[in-house]
Amino acid sequence: MICSITYALIMSFNEKICKIWKDPVLSKVISAGFIALFGLLYALISKFNINSPCSWGFMAIISVILFVIFRYILKMIIFHEDRPNSILISNTEPIQELVEDVEGSKQDDIKDKASNEREKHEYNWLDSDILFAQCIAQTFPGNRGIVWYNSSDAVRRLNFFFKNLRKEEPNGDAVWWRRGYQAFSVKNAEILDVDKIYLGNDRFKISRMAVFVSPNYYKHFIYIEAEAEPATGLYPKITKVQIKEATERGDYITEEYGEFNGRLISRQEYDDGASIYENNVIQHNGDAILRIRYLTRINFILTSKNSPYNNQRFEVGSVELFRDALSDKKSIHKLFEFMDTFQKIDKPGHR
Image 1 (tube, rainbow, N blue to C red):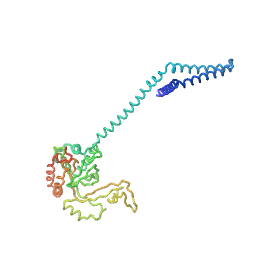
Image 2: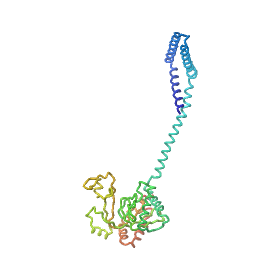
Image 3: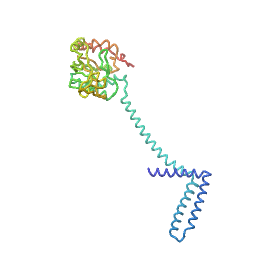
Image 4: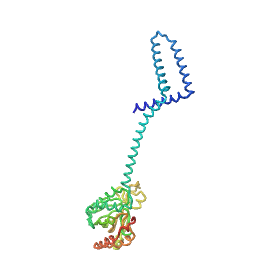
């Protein structure tokens, strides 16, 4: 590599000398300079004592230098002016091409890798029903129709379901929580206890779960029932009477709060990004986590975003069916039969 660079520099210097020599004015100036230089050297040499060994040594060195200069001028400049250019081009172009090929190959590899990553993780909500069905198959293999699970099995399977989801779709909103008019996306799960799990920010104490694997992939769903949990005590205004009345109506009550460094903070403190602890103001610096706890029993379904249940007819028609299923377990078949009436054309992204 060093030899190639050195050779290229020599050839470049030679090319510049050739251009100067071709100039009609500069070439005459250089010729006159050579004549003057030779005259000066002759005058110096004539003053030396020819019997002195030092004089002979100096004249030998001068003769060698003059011979090299004349040979260079005659061979490389006067008689072969075009040769250096051809040599320079023939030797440097392959090197340049090699460098460009290597750099181009690296850039192509980077682009291909980035393209593959985008293809792997590119998310289109219109395909969320396909993704949901794939995760159902990976988490509940062999299931067909309605299959029920107890609390501990439900927690483990739900956690595994969302792990499979995140592998395929890390950042999208393919899975949605639905109950009548209420709906929100759920992006992850975290096991809290043998019968407790976080689905997104929501905390559930699971009592039982049913998974429906339909012959039609877009109709798959997960039905979940969860028990009431005690209040955090952060909000004294929420009374047992209110909780009882909501339960009798078939409605549900939640309380929103935050978790920071192992302690509970109010929703207002979570929103403000700071809280009071031992009479000191503590900044959360974005480390607080929003939590939602259900103080009454609750039932809901998990479906894909592009499912036929993402539909106004489902929102209106399922409200009472969810309430009835929660108050009377024998009524659950009415909800399932109603859901079975929905078809592919009911999907919001039907195409």
